[in-house]
Image (cartoon, rainbow, N blue to C red):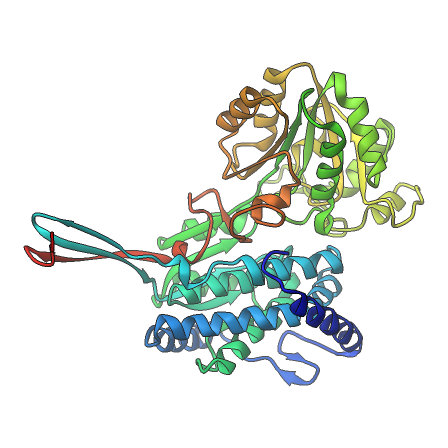
Amino acid sequence: MANITEAEIRKIVENIIKGASASKKTEWTSTEYGGRKLVGVYSDMNEAIDAAERGYKAVRAMTVEQREKIITEIRRLTREEAQIMAEIGVSETGMGRVDHKRLKHLLVADKTPGTEDIVSEAKTGDSGLTLTEMAPFGVVGAITPSTNPSETVICNSIGMIAAGNGVVFNPHPNAICTSNYAVDLVNRASALAGGPEVLVCSMDKPTLDSAAVMQSHPKIKLLVCTGGPGVVKAVLSSGKKAIGAGAGNPPVIVDDTADIKKAGKDIIDGCTFDNNLPCIAEKEVFAFANIADELIAEMQKNGAYLITKEQADKLAPIVLPEKTGKNGKTVKAVSRDCVGRDADVLLAKIGISVGKDVRCIICETGFDHDFVQHELMMPILPIVRVGNIEEAIELAVKAEHGNRHTAHMHSKNIDHLSAFAKAVETTIFVKNAPSYAGIGFGGEGHTTFTIAGPTGEGITSARSFTRKRRCVMADSFRII
């Protein structure tokens, strides 16, 4: 991880050992951890919003230096308690891997921008000086997912506090305890740094009703939603300024100029990171036919288990069962019992017994297969053979479904890379690396778990949660 010294690594390891021992014995709920009441958790959304407004007024009165002290303390506690949050997250949701979730928390601690992201602009000329500054919105209402619950709460909190906002969260109902632990962590950090005891707030029992109250409340000036298409649509229909981070179905193209050995490892590493829960993770592969066999072999060397077409067809209705939609039509939806589960757990559902060394299930399919067309968020990776770059790009763009979220490519051909990047129009485009490089893990650039494709903010940071204010001094302060 970037920016971690040897001394910090030793401290992290010590805390992991302590945390692993303690957290296994500790009882936790959406309002308590180990008998300690979590700070900033409310039973009524109106009370939570009022508390968040008080937090906003307190942080607004602070200097930028004081805000940064709070953020520094959030980073420190996140590093120290990464293991605890990772274990609670897996225990509560049943999704993902503890070791990978710990790394995601360290990534958030190290690479989420703080107050340095808030930069003023000045323009001078014959008519004087105009100053443009990034101002807070006020109280932000945030909806967070079950896939990256505490990571999103902490990442959003750092950015929103850096921008000078107060925050109220309405977490995903399947990750309340994990999300509220993170809310408490932020508030503990604030108090330790001399800030308000309650800076960010949450609900003990978040519901659609509490979300509706948040979305319509006059004190909420900005809505930020990280989740599925349904909740994103709801916040975009609220009539308020909204940032929406929606679904994706990231394709990968591998052409015959790629380093196939590296591509095989990178794709499996990215696809299996936290069992494919990150929205940027590789979801389907389009491989040139003349290198497909070699690519599959390299994937198998890196923990992939190849299943047959018959086995894939048997697994598909288990992970994508049919249900009746709101309009009465039959639709396929991912099974909550399968999302983020280990590969061996999924294989066991079709009678295949393997060890934990198997990290990913791969299979060859046609373009129309359910595994290609649906975002599974599981370590299942379909591979479609293509004849040339034109076919690969056409199919990959269709499979991405216009989400414009993330895409990947392994190639040494600049023309191929450029053509795919232009055609797919995604917020993130990763070349010759695992998907997680796109959020700064093993790649350059800052991290976020709120990637706003639908509303255009892209890889959000503190400046995303600000509004521009202009101050004009006519005929003065021009000194040249």
